[in-house]
Image (cartoon, one colour):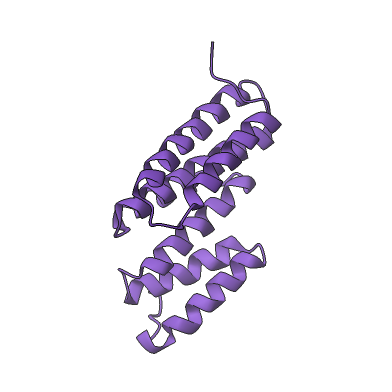
Length: 156
């Protein structure tokens, strides 16, 4: 099997735009591939690390099993404590949503545990947020609505 070809550092901005476009076109595997190519030449690119986390968690609805572990492995590479808390919350929220929407025996309890963990991360991020940045509150509220919509409850 041949080695991957490295893109040039000059190509990074256009590659990032393409990755974002593929995410918007609901082609997260394509976005993931481009992000990996960018990180091969710019491993500390924070925008691309976030984009890769989002592209990986976009794939949870299709049942991709290793996406959670890959996304979680990226979180320590994020520079700020806020970002680490916030994107950890995103991972668990999306994992919980995927489980709730797939249904099945026991899905409500498992999904609730993941969504509740996401809410804990969003509460941590809330304490660390910059003035005017209420993203963590918006996500926390989204998690609560997710629990209401799917009637997610803790195990008795």
